[in-house]
Length: 513
Image 1 (cartoon, helix red, strand yellow):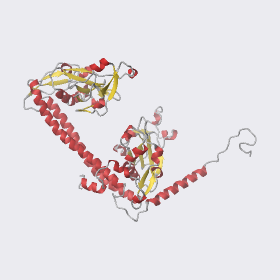
Image 2: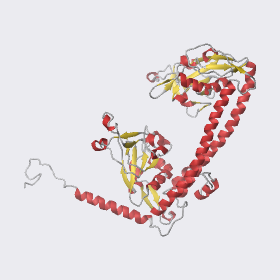
Image 3: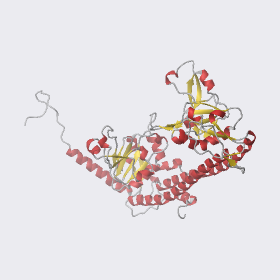
Image 4: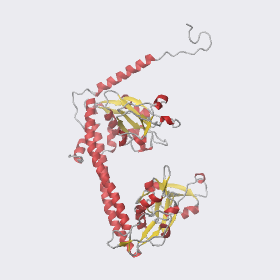
């Protein structure tokens, strides 16, 4: 490989596997005869001192003002953790609460978070930190390289999620005692460092390739947004375009694109019947007169597609189910959520019988055949994105746009006899972009395979050569265990003898001096 290019064949040869996934979970598997030369088995609990976290009281502003000590929570567990954290606490929080300062060079990971449904966020942290209660940290003992340990935990992610995750809990979490008893393979310290160096080199190149693909995908999305905006306003044709007026309204329309001769600007409410959806009434879900129907949520309505693998049901009055029943050609537009979700949507094609929509999803049903639903949906996902951003409302956590306001969305309406050809022209661009997008997604999947192959190789002894002169891992583990045993014995000796409190009865309690 040269530069930052990713050589698939080379990494696959290093990894020794065709794809990753669960294969990286082999770390720690097999019998003693399967161990690479100089390697040994150990539990995570043996490899370092464990720390927990907590949240200092928000009622004491001094703990959080003018703080200089990083306080990590699950939201910080991305690549940015290496450069800092979003929250800092004052040193008084450590002195006055049970919060512990975790040494620099520790390994931090999440033990309670919804993200544990998919992965285990773990990171080597080169600076002193504190943690919230949903995280743990391991400060490795001498003989254990912290960066190697972080990578080893990540390589064992599949097995950890399978063996150590609690079942039936509201929020996904890991059983810490099981996690401490979780067994992995440990190479000699010198080999740990060789593994880390090789992983850094190879994963840096893999990551560079991944970023290139993601950048290309982002450019593709931007290109398609521009194509849709141009196409739905006549900009892909070779005809002249001219300024066209629109009826005044209580909205910030921005600068409207010029339109070809014969096209007009109309408000959404003038060309479509726009309604809000159902609001769930928990108290009446048991009403025997209600009927149960599937309904679409914001999560189901994406920009340019519908995700229908998880559609929930709701009980509603029969008349409501009838009035909100979706029909083919209905354009669904999101009312709220994150700001980039406003107005995004797509067309209903009767994929599910008797389906309705929730109150955070608008339904726009074009009146007659004045406009192709495809043209409306494409326009909403391009021009409508910035328009909704300007005309929506932002609260602390969510953004929204009202039914009254969404009806004011300006929509370009071409002559009906031009619409079919226009739809075909735009679909050609969409299909070409989709081919590129699928190719890029396949490349991202391949990157994931390469990363898994590298981790598999690193923790099964095939990424770097073994050196017979390295101190065997069994020796360093015996030393760690002996040091822990000696420390435990000293701690026991320092404890004051337990004495009984006087009961006032003769012959019991402390002897008189």
